[in-house]
Each structure stands twice: as structure tokens, then as C-alpha cells.
Image (cartoon, rainbow, N blue to C red; front, side):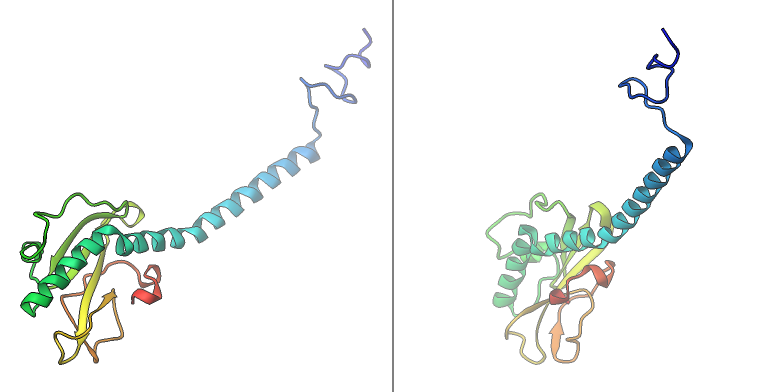
Length: 177
């Protein structure tokens, strides 16, 4: 067989087992691969805040928060003060103990002086998110709001407990601050 007709040695024909590439084509492939890698790295970094914000929303919007909030408000409506801890909040609850956390974002939750503190897991591992109840200043049995993290209600609302939030404010939705 002629060397010009042999598909394994000829560079002019197409053969499924042999794809000859010239140097320019190889450089183009390497360059496009590098560009794709850079774009993926930038996209992953830009997407991370949305994942953190979703974890915060899951912690505050989940069944764990609703269960604890219900017991804090029930204690407050009966006693006129905020519960010191989980045991005090359970005093008027219809459950015996707080069970396993149902949220994928919450590792542990506890009550301290009326405030509910969530220890987060996942990407925000070890960070604390605090939800504090508050009443209008001078009206302990008035309407109750819940504030997460730092707030702007210091003068007009009496907030319970201490803010132990270690989650960056940019991950806490504005409606919760």
C-alpha cells in the first residue's frame, strides 16, 4: 500500500482512530480550555453568597425556628417575660423536649433570654445566627417582631437577649434585619 493512501500515516484524510492536529489547533484548544476554567472559577465565587443566603433563609424559615418561636411566645404571653433557656420555654410547651434538628442548615438551636440562637452547619459551619423577639419600648405585652442580626430598632423596640450573630450581614435578607 502506498504511504499516501495509508490512513494511519497520511495527514490529509480523516480516520476515526487518528485525528492529526496541527500546532495552531492544539493551542486553540488549550486556550479555550483555560478560558472555560477561568469563567467557571469566577461563576462559582459569584454564586457562593446565594448559597449562604439560602442556608440562612432555611434556618430562619424552617420548622425548627417555628417550634422554638412558638414556645418563646407562649412563655412570654403567660409569664410576661422572656424564657431564660430551653427548659423554661418547654415549661408551657406541649412537647417534652426539642428533637433532632430538621433543617439541613441548623446543627443546634438554643434559647437564651428569649433570643433563639442557631448554630449553623454546611458552608456556614460553626457560625451563629440569632433571632431576637422585641416589643415596643414600654409595652411588654404589645406586638412582637423578630429581628435577625444587627438591627435598626434599638430606640423604638425593646429586644430580648443578646445578639450573638457571627454570620456576615450580607447573607441575612434585608427583610429579617
